[in-house]
Image: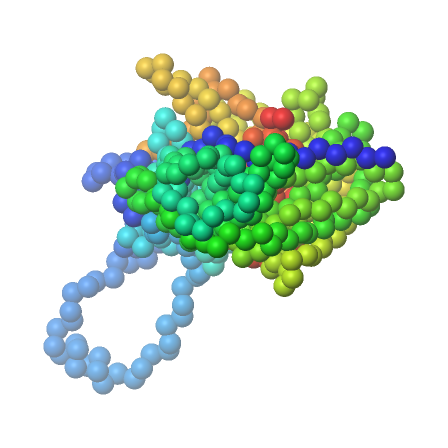
Length: 512
């Protein structure tokens, strides 16, 4: 006997995305002439770090010396210097200049302060096992990102979501095809990912949240909906992908064309070896349609089972998605339902050639659940997060992503909301945020800050070769909106950047 719960996706309150191209003015300036350098060297890409070697003259030698040098035998080849660590910062427009980058040693102490150049990059020579922190946002809305275990030769890319021109993006459906919709249609459902709107006439306008578009590009799916006598079923659909939001924050006008399609496909998602967990939700199966990198998951199903397996069937819309992502989830309520531990396996692949397909997910391969995660704020401005798991080791995963959020007030009584994301090796069971420079100290949590339940996410991807690749590509695997909000129904894994399989285990607040 099994129970089933299907969650529909209606109109979801939406928000915006990024600005870019314009360089972020929210980042702290470099040291002014004559200003102390925060007990560390502040450098730009055009600055040579002082190594203590004699200064090299740029003055041309006298003519006799030049002639003599021309007759000299060629010296030995010049050896290449030590490999650098390069940090790129991008936003929705591309590379972002004037972003402060802090290079710290393994203990978190400041070693160098640099600023990205016009190509959105800075490169510095640092020791093995260093840390790098990207300073984003403002002191009233700080968003910091730290990468641990940085090695010489690393190329890291950070994505800045703090100044988007697509914030509160608006979409207007200006018209529908002249061709009549399927018989029995009484209304329409428009979806851009999880953002959407029911309507009966056009033009129709609605808002997008940040996760409903991908750097200014978004897909649109419109379904024709029947009346009560048809059980409000979806009778047909049409779609238009690769739509673009205006960079000035205006309205994106979309005019989809026909014909209406009724060729809905189906995808079976089978969960095998479902574990029995005390205090858990029913295991959840789901399917996301990915278009323009934006997931659309109209329903997730949960089912209890006596034989350790369950199969759920989900509709999809041929011609709309470029990929399908199947997922199997288990989750456990903790601490009087205030916190949530969740583990999932998600597989992305091309849509089937025909209308029907299937995916099987073995839940015995799930990463162990994380049992707890706590914040220690006893060290001023340098809180730490630690986590535990008793079901098995996570050391074979590719790495961890820890998100620490806090609230406080400034001297004027204005509210501050901050986040600090730390990318750590899979062997880590704790992280401590590093020190900031004097010019960026205002971005740190204040002594009176109140910390939320941290999000700890450990990932293992078939498309990742280990922590080195994860730390270089962490921006392509951000925590999903459901995971950030602590929701156990709906997609837990982010949309995968390529075909493959991702295993993810996480501890977060319980927002259900």
